[in-house]
Image (spheres, rainbow, N blue to C red):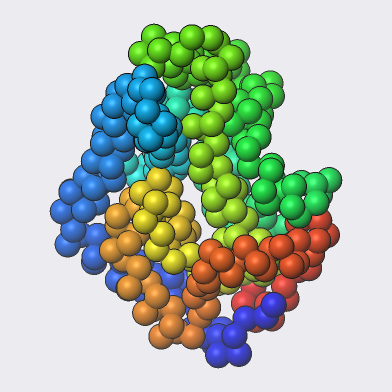
Length: 342
């Protein structure tokens, strides 16, 4: 895949382009209230926390519909806290306070998600964002499982995410200091045991096995779109070599894709992971709501400068990955040559 023939001339300067875009975006940010910058997303996370007690209580009901409602509430809230909350906290987009940012990162990543905060920051912020689609660095290769065929990967593998996540977290603890490892183990255990205890003592489950099965179901509710979104928005787009990677604005405009607005996923995953992923990669410290607000500015600017602005539907990407699974997820992707843009 090559960049559009109308790509901006080299003399324009990638840094100049990015600086011009940053100025336009910062103008929108400065004109926005605290509610727009942080409040909307904090309110969504707060509502998700407040919805947990009704969700646990619904599971006490003998009515299948009320019980299913409880599963849905707990599942959606789980993904809102673990995906949206962890993502925003890891980027420091929930608050402008460094101290509170660290607190929220530990809460959302370790207590809610059962993962390690240090590796989440390193793997996502430093590597994936710093080297988006650069082979061997930020190329989303952690999502590739060549040993699985396309149907197992796309339909069955997502169900294992709730089990694999804490196991990977424990394995990563070998690389951190002892006190950090003990803290992470303690917070992960707190999060897992809290849900287990509430299912037994509030929801009224009679056996440990039924409580554990319910935990797996709620934590798997949106696992399929979670896995799909993570591969749809980068894999299959241009890939770059470490020694010839393009400038930041070209890297993000070429190697990132937006999906359309999807109400449930907008709520649970956040705009920055769904319809504003390009904006998020260009300005990762912006909250979901601010990414949505600056989206018209970013898309207009990239179109003006004749830079790619990748968009596609969820269903179209799903079909594409089923058709070209071997090429995207098994074989080594080809390096895109960007003559004049390095």
